[in-house]
Length: 156
Image 1 (cartoon, helix red, strand yellow):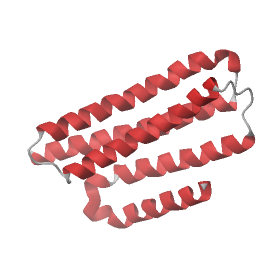
Image 2 (cartoon, rainbow, N blue to C red):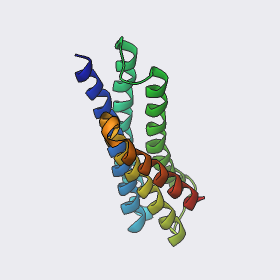
Image 3 (tube, rainbow, N blue to C red):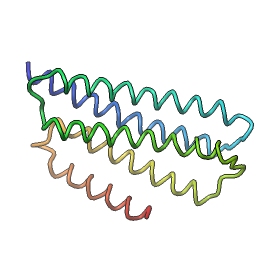
């Protein structure tokens, strides 16, 4: 029984990280073909993905509150859930700010930065996808952590 519960946590982490990948890809698509006239509609499209991420966040928090035994420490589950949700929220915030500040043109530097964010999102997805097989994939997980740190430093 505990094994099925464990897989539900890992599955929700994967769904959240996949949502982050898709949110970044949607934002990249919006900014690559930037049209200020349709920006409000694009905000709604991006918000739908953010809401999907929130749904998974609520499911994870509900599981943590309900389950007696969790596959990893409760604080770690809560922290990871919060951080994955924060990735999605922050990606959405970029488009909200573009809309709020009436930005009319997207620079190549901004697109390059968003591309780095996409690489980070994909690396996080790969990392989270390996959680359920930690013992057999610990070396690969370490590589993804190093790659995420490298991409973060590159973005700085």
